[in-house]
Image (cartoon, rainbow, N blue to C red; front, side):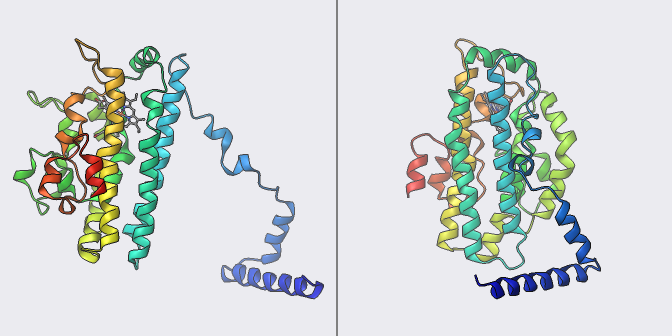
Length: 318
Ligand code: HEM
């Protein structure tokens, strides 16, 4: 760049800066002073590395507990990225099909990564260590992941998250509180005979139920399903992404997760109780819950076969 060209660039930049600060009634030269004395940014400060590495506080001295904590944290960070993409789709002032598809592709990539990496849980810890340190974590359970539930509320109508046995008595137009009362995960952590809630559920509800209700209301007309129905019904590329996301979130990830429960908690003749107190063999398998975000995108047969091992990949390929 010639001398005068670079002078011109500087003048232009200063002018733009002047306009930027003037618009806010600020004195631009004072900000330039600040720039003069400011330190250069470092990588470790930018990503808050020291803070990040101070957030693992094992409750026991078993080294594999660190794998367990960090993997949960990684998952929560991915969940946070998913939520941020969903927020951008659902509250976009002028949502286009291209934007919808591109952001769904991101969501799909995050979930694919979570599904693939679940091996870290399934085979990446010593079973003996796991069974010991998990006793120090009672009654905490991944069941209490608030972000996991938030992804559900942003993706579909509440009626699709209602326990399958309670759905016949309700419709999408039923009172929202009645629907929330019957969420599948609330039933899953409630003793059917007595109606008693597990402590894991009680604590979870106390912390999050208010937020969930607000979120469900905020996303009532702009969750992914609702947007598809109202603006993009029949759009092939969007339909294909929504189906893929549904399988990842409600079949593939849950099956990968279920494998870890099978690996650590199943021991003949007696099964080891789950930390959250659910009957996990009945609760976790997708074929029992039949939770799907976009039921209208599946045939009756596909719904019936939902979550059955062996058919799921075939559904995806069809
Ligand atoms: C060795 C690893 C793991 C085992 C053995 C395991 C076991 C379980 C069990 C038994 C449940 C049923 C609820 C209960 O009674 O506690 C559950 C629920 C759950 N866990 Fe895990 N888990 C593992 C890792 C993870 C990880 C890494 C995450 C990531 C955040 C996670 C997230 C969840 C979620 C979201 C639920 C609720 C699922 C639903 O409501 O359908 N789990 N887990």
